Length: 294
Image (cartoon, rainbow, N blue to C red):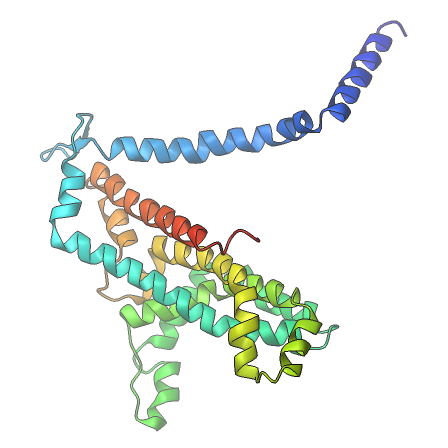
């Protein structure tokens, strides 16, 4: 009894302190995940950036910890690396635009047109592809896009040939893979638009197209920006889909993967390119004010 009394008193004092200081309580709750973030994520990025300044022995391929900027000089001076970087950014932007165009009518139907009792089931249906294996979906598209595959069979009556393997196939597959990440934010944004706002636009004489351009899209911009962050970053760093359906297409992820065992410092320097591009993209999205209301 005498041993448990001081412990109970300490617990009560600690609970009282945390109750009076909510910021201290929040700091203690976030300390563990923030520590993990700093050590595991930011620490690995710091190690990646440091190793990009090392060199590789041309004879043994061993990493030599001698500080140099040769790797970044190579990235900036060699035309092939600039082309691959620009191609990767172009693919990420194309996937983001296609996802936004495809996601809007789907999200509008699930959020505004479908009956309320069906909306949760439709959201589950949108999430269902995310539960399947990435490789299963990518290889399924490889079969669809193959010569004599399902897509070529469907297009042949119209005299159209399938895209085959290449850059177009990569964009199609990435669009399919990351489309749910754009639909869900847009569904949430459309669901939060009050009905009286759309009714007021119709009462003022605006047609459907004008209402979408002048009312819906400005309200939906934060949701589109949130979805674009996912589709852009995931497409920019992907290297598996392009290996499966890209043919001879090279993206930044392929170069990083190919140089990991041959030239680790160069691979680390290549790895900083997507990080810098994504940071610049986030800053650009933030400057538009689209993320302020998320």
